[in-house]
Length: 235
Ligand SMILES: [Mn+2]
Image (cartoon, rainbow, N blue to C red; front, top):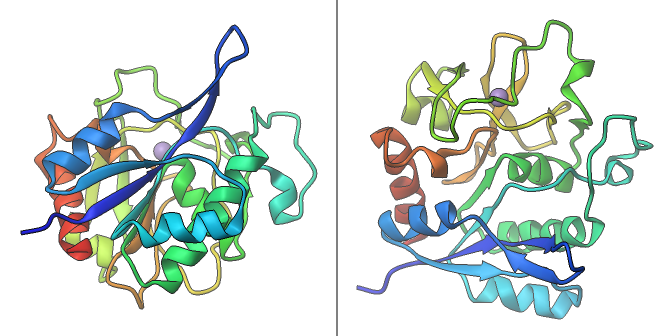
């Protein structure tokens, strides 16, 4: 049987010598392959017709983690604690996720990816979580696979039905969804009120998570199963 092809969006990394690399953590690649999919990298391109054709190549889309998102895209000026931004990547991914949504293919946003999909459909994010009163630690110092904070899932949400009422996840973010885009609902929170997952309830699999399940597949079978669920939706 033909395995579904999963496009993973790439970062543009600038090396010390100034060279630029289209790159992604191999954790995403391994997670997709082990879950039964065929991972391919979607490098940043600018031509809209090329972006549309990238979408035609794939059966499912993963919006990967990475740099901060340009606040001009959600109508804000840059806050003091905004990190490095890559507007060309933002532009690429916004067009990708809209085209993939039009194709009704499964879409999974991870970390930056949940924020990107929210902004693409009209939502906003916190430029920095110090804006949240009594915020807990969301940039962990523990190793990448180590779960450090609890997430409460929303009852009867798609993700809640999958993960259960509460899980403990890793956390490597200083931004997060603020106002949820029209058409999406909150699926998970932390105790400080930070949104950790959103989903489009009219789709079979159109969701974003703030944690990094791809870093946890070896130690947490549930996170491996999450990727398998995504691949099945893309079949
Ligand atoms: Mn977190």
